[in-house]
Length: 302
Length: 270
Image 1 (cartoon, one colour):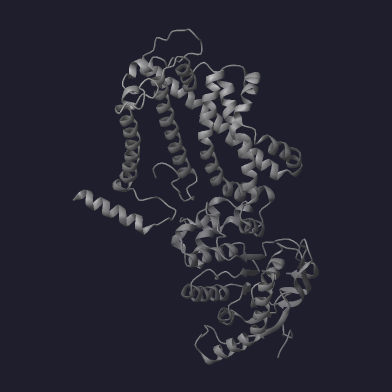
Image 2: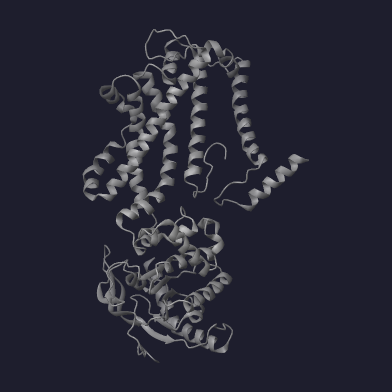
């Protein structure tokens, strides 16, 4: 009865504000419905896999189903050694080392994202603000933008050697050119009416950039950042596999080298969950900082 | 037919002399406006009426200083217009409020650009919003308001800089008919309670007659002044009176040829 009432209220709330920006109604039922679909979707995927295993189509050595690769948590986690030195033994517990590995990778992604976001927005704004700078740099940036971040990997190692720096640099570079070009195109697309308002209200050029152009472009730039998040995850794994002695990418490499398919899928699960959590976190930040933007609920739960 | 002859006691607030505007496009130059001679008195309510694409909005933007004249000159408040200035407020069709600012911050945006401190700005915002009947909305966001309320905020924002003339570019075009007539009453009140001149662009004949002291009728492109019609109906105007209808009928006749020409042009361009 009570559940019915909540569902009803949630529905009413939803009907009242169709597609309008603003704080969504915090009905429990409304939050549970997408979660339910998420679980159902995942359940379908897993059961197909498990069925394939039960029917004998999927070789448990090559494609171990979830119940196998998730079973032996402790023995999996022992591979997550939080050390950059090869051969060094770790005294920490399995869970601890697993968490530390995930955190290490996450921090690399985060530093790269923050650095890339700030630098590229600053660069894009500077290019449009100082015409000479734009004329001198934009052609080169446009030329460098389509180069796959993976191609920068050797450069990252030449420049920064082994350790955290090349991984952060890789995330940075995977973002920088794309986001700079995107910033410029967002600036060019700022509503003419808003620019006219600024001019009529007596705003100087600097004021127009700070008070009109910057807030106007931030929402779409944040969207671009979220889109590039998954790219950043891919890149950081490659960087870790090659240039850094720790992190999830290193474990993936280890799984490959030791032909440990269970570990491989276990790590993939971790990567998926962490990446998803990251996207949710970014969306929460977006909702807090860019409160005037309607939430389009792209991907995942609303 | 009384043409541009208009008895003006005071010197006019704004004067357009031989104003023309030509856009340089890839092909032939595009003449938007030609030979505009017009005086706007202090505290006068002038409406620009014409078919779409006749250049009436262009003239408004020229007066605002957002575009430069190709020929002639525009003088406002004794100075030649070459750039935007806070003596001329501008109200746009819609979506001109900044969505990232609250209603109060929107209203005082211009004062913020002049580095007025925050507390003083809030007082001004309160005062202005009271004038436009939205004192409750000071901390709301623009997307929480209806279209009519947003346009009232936009008018308030323009008034906050104490302009001498308010230039309005079809500000009620996006509103439904009922809201629009309410907004016309609102604008008339604002105008009567202040010392500003109004220059109001519309293609709606009823709206023109409801608001104007004088209606400037434009020809189809290239826009010229076809005629200027004074409206001396008492305010508040009764839209169902015979005098009102006589005037709208007369304007409809005047506009018919121009609308046909504008329409033919649009079809041709397409």
